[in-house]
Length: 328
Image 1: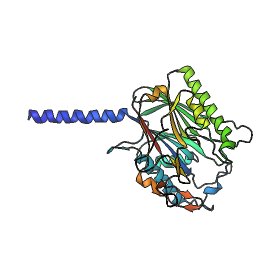
Image 2: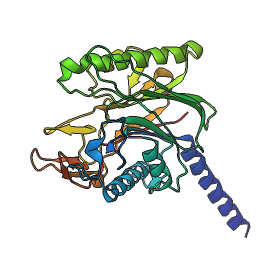
Image 3: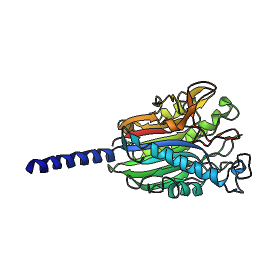
Image 4: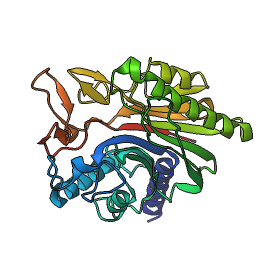
């Protein structure tokens, strides 16, 4: 009887150690959702591509499939070597508005997760915004605000940068920036100054955080519409920020988060301050099999996107998620 009691005690202790180990690992996800629009027209925005009477036929049925697909994608990012826990935080790009975020958190497959969220209200002409999902059980919000990106000459209004700070389970404060930089429309070289504007505003905000807390834990993530060696990302790196996603790859064939004309590359990135970099365990691309389809033109696989032009594919996104784990 005494041996059985000891065995049970040892088992319980082992379970508790695993539980606390899982809690101590913070899982962060970055995902471009590929046009997560609702079906309602905003008269102040050019959102007519995604309405029931548009060429995308963006009706309620397609909308709710998309909402649940994004929820499924986020849930799948919590799987790790047979264990599963929901991500602690998710940075989202290409979100239309608060209404979409409310549906994602309260009425989708994520409705039992009790996520809370922050979302910007940017002057982007199409109405695209960025958002931050977080678990109140592992991140206690202290402060947040949008950072407006003032356009330069010949630059269209773009997405705000989202800033949030909060305490994680270790008691440390983490500062998070979510970015969706301007696209390469018009060509990489012609549009480069637009992304440099975002990089400079971002690094100025990082400097402001460091002026108060020099060793602050800082995390920057999003769709930068640039690759690791491009000028805007090198500029950010020069501010003692490390692109921990630079060499990230998947386990099912993905060599980047995005595929264009047969070439893999990563427009999505996760940067960490040196103080946070030392805590990082891993950063990978979540190329789950259900997020991929065969690339019949160029070979291999590609992201299972929702639309290709006007053709509805009933997929997930044209970008794959990044998963970064760290242990404070």
